[in-house]
Amino acid sequence: MTPLLELNAVSKQFGQNQVLDGVSLAVNPGEVIVILGPSGCGKSTLLRTLNGLEPIQGGEIRFYGQLLDAATDWQRLRQRIGMVFQSYHLFPNLTVLENVLLGPLQVQRRERQEALLQAEQLLTRIGLWEKRHAYPRELSGGQQQRIAIVRALCMNPQVMLFDEVTAALDPEMVQEVLEVIRDLAGSGMTLLIVTHELAFAQAVADRIVFMEEGHILEQASPHQFFDNPRSQRARQFLAKFS
Ligand code: ADP
Ligand code: MG
Image (cartoon, rainbow, N blue to C red; front, side, top):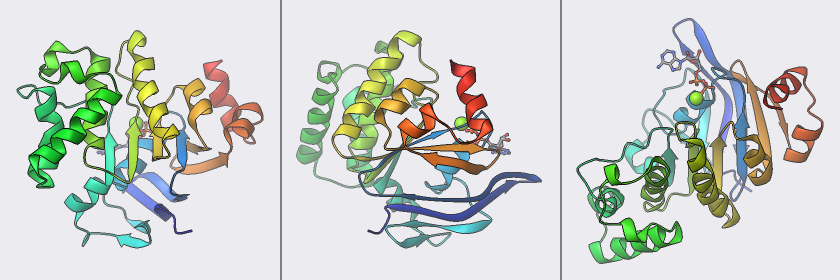
């Protein structure tokens, strides 16, 4: 099986700072991978390289076997690789529906009726169809983040990258956002998730990738990782949360 995404010995520096140091990872279609690791170990940078937001200095990245580099049409590729961040970046002057339809209509040039149908289906699925004409300021943080996820999904990506999407939310809103991601995982979508929500990680992941100082220290099933992590570093990391 050709991996959906493949990193081979990827390295990345910011000045003298080696942020990714020979990272190799294959993401298979339908797989849910959760990346864990201490703050500053390179998780966000890793996700950003997959979206063309960070040029790399060594190694290679492939999407279904196709090499991604400076010659890649990244705008086109970003439609295939959806990404949601900690801060939701909805356009404040646009309604929920207008936010969701922006990409499908402006970037993908799809027919309005067809895109609208999909947008309304997605909003129904996450329970926010009634809010379709609301403005972001009228929504809670959790609701805005769910809309941000729908906005990415409405481009029909083949994989979704989630970078600490609940980190900026009030605690009572975390679960409703995780629930949307859990639903996506259950539907067979390929997901690459960075989170500090360990119970969620354990429940949703097919595989845990544990990073430390720019490289992958451990890859394991959730069962193996949480019950019996191999490295001392992983044990220390988990101990902080228990
Ligand atoms: P994580 O997401 O795991 O917390 P990051 O990928 O954000 O880690 O950061 C990894 C390292 O790269 C950190 O040392 C951080 O300071 C550095 N870094 C991240 N982005 C930049 C940038 N744009 N310029 C310089 N250094 C950066
Ligand atoms: Mg980060």
